[in-house]
Image (cartoon, rainbow, N blue to C red; front, side, top):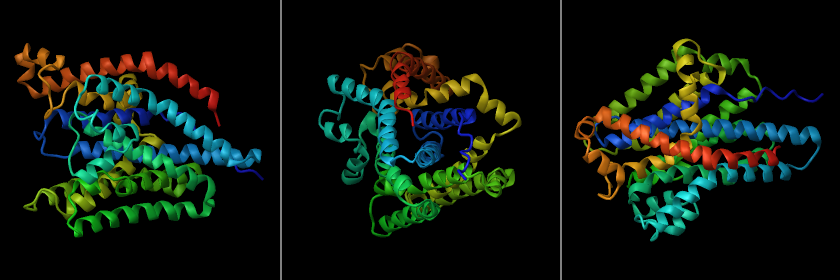
Length: 366
């Protein structure tokens, strides 16, 4: 008897969660060190857990459909890569092209690192960031994950999947510990794809149990006490890490992402099964959902609109801020102002480029 495929319809609250995640990144990046709390780390980690969940769910559904139709997994594999290309590549490569034409450093000099989605590897090797485009490292991590993970889903027997995903988590933490104990600079374990696998692994495990309608996991993941506990543990790890004299220590390098991932897992899990009350209202209101939907563009463009550490005097946003001293001198007003500009740019990108191109995905359904 064929197993019923669970409902894999659109999960509205996940777009609201994307809005929160990208907002944390923007606030932290635009405020510099003013917050003294690594919320941008948490925002990026939340995106990794979300990706782990969504990609695993999509691939499990495609694999099930292949089995039901008795067709080769090569079909779904091809569809997956085409659909990812249509969604991700257009505005990424358009951005790189514009930066190349305008000669925004260091894009021309490092162009092949950008074109091959390997800026994270460059950062790890050279131990240096890439100015206004250094945030693209997280997109490189996601693309590198997409290159191999579908093959695991499609060609490894299902009974081994949970063990592999748990292995991702253990391997990732162990690799960060290895780098730390060998005196490797903190940037390497921070930006490499294998050292981010605990976040993807947790998202993948959530998708596996959600797909198979495991009620015990649902009860566990939606327990609000455990959600609160995961938040307390995350805050505790951040505070503990700050007690060390050196800024990047065994807590922040090795264990911080693990607890970011754990908290993100409970957040994503509760959003998947559906928050209630005030949280439901926040995540499902039209503004949150819309901003979550265009969050990819918001993330890509935000550092080119304003970068706390690498601003060109010719940047029109900087010129405008110079004419508005009241806004420029107030951090809250400044962040709201910058967010509105970023939303405008991302909205133009969404309606003129992303949304029309995304319709092509319908031609490559599973």
